[in-house]
Image (cartoon, rainbow, N blue to C red; front, side, top):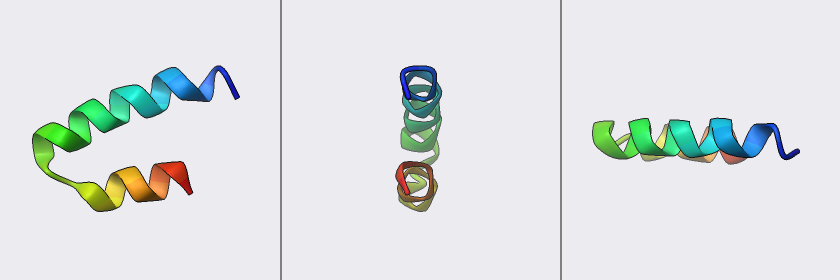
Length: 29
């Protein structure tokens, strides 16, 4: 799980810049 956390953080940063909330929800799911 620890290896997934940094990936999720990077995706969150990119999604925040692109204003894509759906991508963040799909990643957490």
